[in-house]
Image (tube, rainbow, N blue to C red; front, side, top):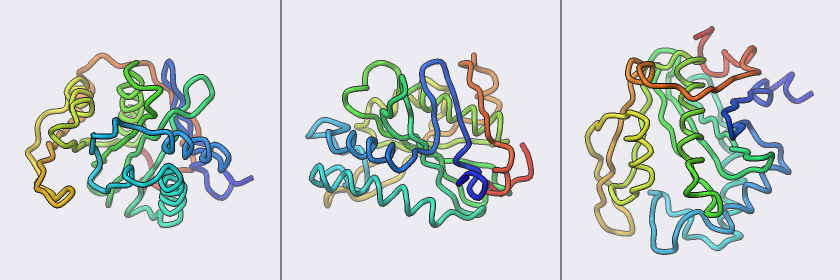
Length: 216
């Protein structure tokens, strides 16, 4: 089995409405289809890399290639875990968690996107909540960070709702113009002090070395 050689394939993160896991190639095709149908309003620009400006076919291809490349470039010192979020058995978007030198720093950065048809029901918040449980409760994360453009109100709202604190700004160039990103940070202590959504994680055993750790 593939999971014998790549145990991350067996990792499952389950919350009341969602399951987060690496998709099979056929499921990845479904995720790509969601991206092709659209993940934000035409006038929105939520990503620094303008991949959603591509044609529907280009967006789908980007999702597939990016997912494969992150798996292929994975090292314990620098990794990106891109989990498909499944609702009622079908994918609805992607929840990403990445880290550099995690075994030493114990800090993660998150990002996500959700198909337009699935927005407005709290599923984006639940995706990030499930990811934070994996990070803090299972991997021993010390702090989680997130960054959003100031005009990406839904992402900013999720960070604030989950207890992240402001952590400064970053100035980048988007479409030839300077744009400010708001940084947020959630400490282990602040995460632990909040009421927790019931989340379960299975399949983590055997994955520790991939994250650069021996245990939480």
